[in-house]
Image 1 (cartoon, one colour):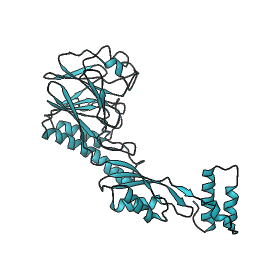
Image 2: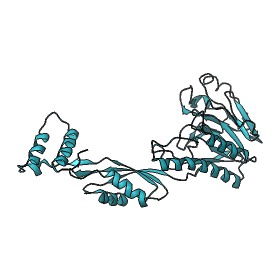
Image 3: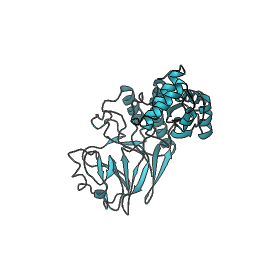
Length: 354
């Protein structure tokens, strides 16, 4: 038997604060499409159970388009059982699809579904049941037991918290978790493993790298395999642009430092030291990258300004006097001095100081 473990799909998630509107709308569509592709993967691999370990939707009141999409996918794939446990984002949402035969839901009490020798149990953790749920979990040691929960695993009990110590020696073979958006798998005890599947698609620069789902291949034991499946990766990289004079030179330095894929999204951190009269680089570099090298680039200018005060010692101009005056100020930090000198030199040269 094979089972898919997925979580944190976040249909309807807002991404406008992370990407421009056109990219944000594209990524919302791609969230739905990746979920659809995952179900098609299950069909082709003859997988008949998909565990949804929380946060299918991004809120308790999802958009009609996202609700209709999700329930339509479930309804039109009757050969697959969808086991849906609500997470902290959709914890108050109604199960509008409870009448769909292949949508199996969990509640605030332990609920189990059996598939031959495999038993899948789950409970939605709340403030009311967070202490008692561990003692009320009873599993047959002769069965293959999968337990589904949503929250942070650690040493504490409480709402959205999973007490790892209290789940040990409970005959759990695989603990299918949601809430953490990056894939992670570790031993629970001598018998079992706990695993976060991570989210299907990275939705921002805090969700970097590979995303996908976990396939459980079950015979006499559970063998989990992470399947990278996202439409795109979100990648962060540093690039040293020391000494460049303009945006195109900076773009060339970035291209030398980073290997780009046109399908992916990047955050590039510009590092190094630049002369004081070099104009801001980030906007130009982002524009050049997005035009030919990647879907979208968010570029952060983290460069410092290079100042050799000795170059101004014999300069009797207003510029030289200004630099020396700022440099000798004992009350300013080096960072403030750099900013003041940068703005001042640009203003003296007739440039934009903003």
